[in-house]
Length: 149
Image 1: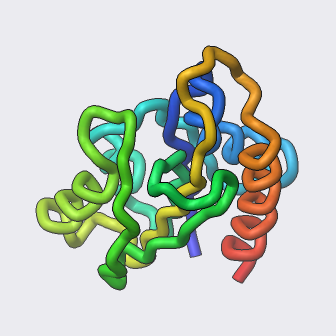
Image 2: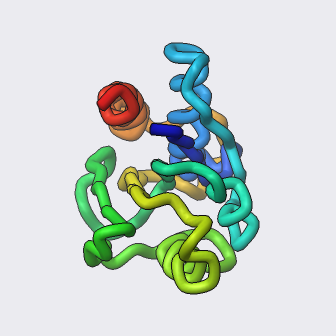
């Protein structure tokens, strides 16, 4: 199954770069996996997804949960996502649902969002906080298993 992993976020706002860190670690561990960084990700994210059967998007989120925890939301199955506050111009879930409405025949049949709960997005740093850094490692390992199955 042709799979793409997309990392969303701002690498310079500490934990907000979690999705990008996942993609960077994934590329080092398994360079054969298609993985891209779309930075702040907006409607253009839909263009990257077209032609893939499965897409996994990783983004930093703020839900009020414990920092470093993460959530899987199956968009294709229309799971209800947790209430997410984001730093992007348009929220990711709305963008993905819009893509399914506008380009349903070109969108992946399997679409998963993994949201990593942040601790600090205000500090200017390329380093994640320790709990988010650990979550990044765990998410990378989970994605490797998801892509292999």
